[in-house]
Length: 185
Image (tube, rainbow, N blue to C red; front, side, top):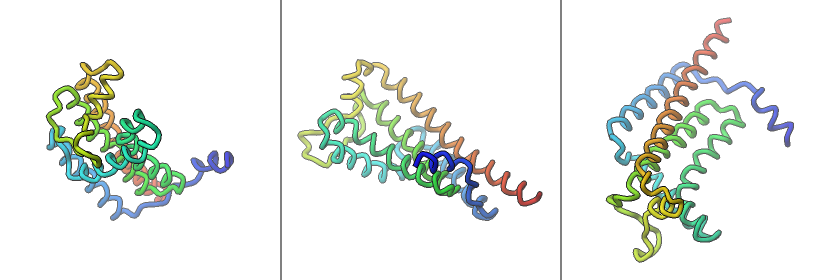
């Protein structure tokens, strides 16, 4: 198995046709513009992220209260990350970038939630009874002693999310350029 994992980076990426590359790049640029124009507010995709987040509390809740609390964000980040890892092993260019892009888009969603830890102005959703509703990041940051830094932590997470999304799109464009250069030579 170790040899298999070592050999993966040596495999070529699956080519992307020029029309598909252009369409994907347009999609990502439009989505980035939409996300930027939202100024940190929730995006339409965050409804899907919320379902995965809440499912994470239920899934990780089996392992105790701490993992239950962290489980929403863990699953929300794990799902696109593991899908990206799968597409990486298959060298599937567009699948890898799509999942990587939405892995980092989840960071924007998480940052919005983090920044609300002290204010607690966002409406909270739960899959359990309303008696058990608590703000994840109020509890997490309080337990870590960093509650007063909620907006600063959120800003770093948001910046990393933007950097990751932009880097993924840049990598896709670079892959397209490399494919055209290989085809021309």
